[in-house]
Each structure stands twice: as structure tokens, then as C-alpha cells.
Length: 240
Image (cartoon, rainbow, N blue to C red; front, top):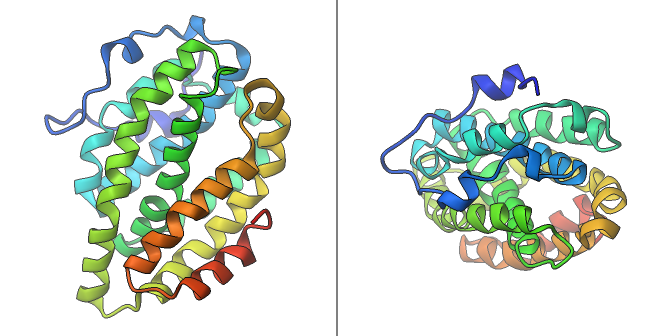
């Protein structure tokens, strides 16, 4: 496999503070994955490598737990071609491009910490428990789940600190930094269902439902009005 130059450039550096992935997950060979699994982990690798780069640049405290994630997924799915040649290629490229527009701490905490990290957490949690998913991928997902869970748990406090320090209203910062990412996220839904729905039982409507159910209370705890948050999400995510 030829590794993506961008992925290789932003592969996280090891950190003594990083959560250690279980050896069983790190020991899985790429040859153990079938073509659908390779595509799945190519997608998650694109997400994870970008998140790690943005965390390291703008909120390093969240980067520590990701140190082994990028290298592990690069080892398993380091070639972009499965994604580029799939129906998800164009919409995933647009989502990654949208997330890349987050250029400061507050925007990264929203686009990655509040939104996409939560999506990753839900995907890992779901994949680890779906019987249709091959055992190798269930192991990988189960290993990644607590790493994303820790970042999701730490993000609200960091977001609140940014708002207090900058004078930004929480809802204003949230909507400004999440609107385009949410629209681009919604656009991948059809492809996710077509590729992974029947094979793995992974359906976009279920992911979005769990995402909204988890995100809304977090936003309310940050001082946002539930009605306004729901309205914002409904305007971007057509499936809710």
C-alpha cells in the first residue's frame, strides 16, 4: 500500500502521556481486514489524523491521548485509494476540508471536540457491539472508543474556558464553528448507508440520533438554550 503523504505528514508523535492502545489492537495485520473494513478504517484514519494535527496545533492537551491512534490506523489503512474510489470519496473530502477550516482553539474545540470527536465515539461504540462487524474491526473500535470518550469528556471544560477568556457567547461560537461541518457531515449519510448499512448494520440515522441525544445536553450544560441548539442541528442534519 502507498501511504497518503498528508496522512504521513500529520501522523501523531508518541507521547508518554498517551493512552496506550491494547496490544491486541496494535497487533492486527492489514491482511486480516476485508475490503469493506479497509474502507471503513481509511475513513476513520482520515478523521483521526486530521483531528490529531488540529489538536496538537490548537489544543495540545487533547492531542496526548491520540498519539498511537494515527500510526495504528495508518498501518491498517494507509492508502487513500479505497476511499477515493468509493461513492464516499467526494463527500468525505468535503467534510475533511470543512473541518480543516477550524483555525483556532475555539473553532477546533467545536468542530472536532464537540462535533466530530463525538461522531467518532458513537461510531466506535456502535461498531464494537454490532455482531455483523468482523471481530478484527470490533477489537479496533473497542480500543479506540475510550480514547474518544476521554476527549469528549474533557472538551466542554476547555470550551467554557475559551468562552470566558475571549468573551464569546457559547451558542454563537458553537453555531459559527459547527454549521458547515454539520452540513458536510449530513452529506455523507447516503453513502454510509449504501456501503456499511447492509454489510455491518451501521446506519447514518442511528449515528445521528445518538449524536444529537448526546450533544444537546452537553450544549445545555454549557449555557446554550436547548430550543436554539435543536433548531441549529435540525437546520443542518436533515435526518433528525
